[in-house]
Length: 267
Image 1: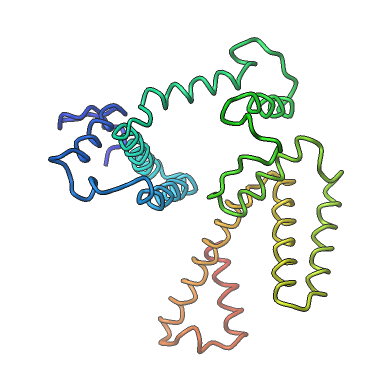
Image 2 (image 1 turned 90 degrees about the horizontal axis):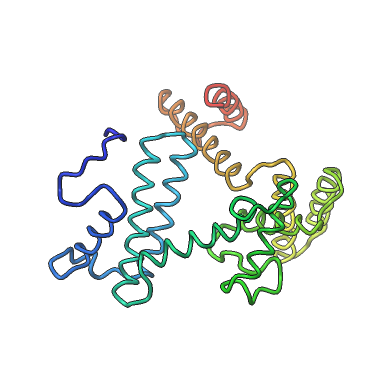
């Protein structure tokens, strides 16, 4: 695949309008039976899957994958616009008008000559402007409007970033580390399963805060960690297979030796 090849020879321009035209055809009376029966709800999990595949491409710095998966994500956006068009809910023009107006309104330092000092002030201005917008006018808390479908790690870090803007934060990194130690101590004292779940949740939330303090995205860090684990464990499986053995036959010492070797060869 040549990611720079944007020529279209099938009657559908290589533009977003061309994609909208194609989706309209697929949903039309002489289109595809599968596409015709899809709804907003049936596309939900597929959209998430495509978004995660795009993230994989970004993590791997794979331009071809990023190009392909970006197209898949845009396809789902086009389908949502087509579904809205069929019910007269909104149009593509409204979608683009809304986002353009929103971005201009939230960047007064770019479009209206407003002076700002640093990123913190920029983010505070962003929050204040959001409160004046119709879609957010009923928000009473700085934590209102969090995406419910976001992963728990991501939404935890997003919450922590928001409250940081109003100075609800530790004074230094020692406070963050001490909080983690405190939560681990409380876990060690827990007796019931419910208590253990409660304290483990607090430990995870505190570790996410440690990530924030170090400018590390918790979701990305954990994703990279499990990918390292996957590579290393597969290395152990392959090493066992070469010797005609299985992983469950290894002694603890053999497991540790192979794990150390896997870390050396797979980082």
